[in-house]
Length: 137
Image (cartoon, rainbow, N blue to C red; front, side):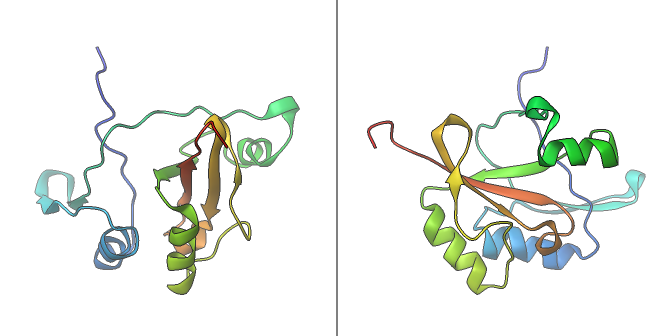
């Protein structure tokens, strides 16, 4: 029986640069590096609490996911990090040179404010930031 999402692996051309991104820019806790000789890889880990798997499919056959499926037929689409202050995080990351797919956050699933970082800023991985909104707003 599956009990947890253990990890999501991202292939990166520059390990040190990617470690700095997740540690310094995104503020994640760095657990350290490990060389796995049998797999001929160097790995670095950033543990995060609870997560979910989100399956995304085009609504009425339209939108960006439709284009993605045409090009790739499916696959890992994006990572999403939860934040407690999306505006502050966007300002912080813009100041560091990150590009976003929109100027400002918009409303997404689960009544969350969401914004996407351009994949070119993150070794080709699309990264979403989301901030849950109080239902009392």
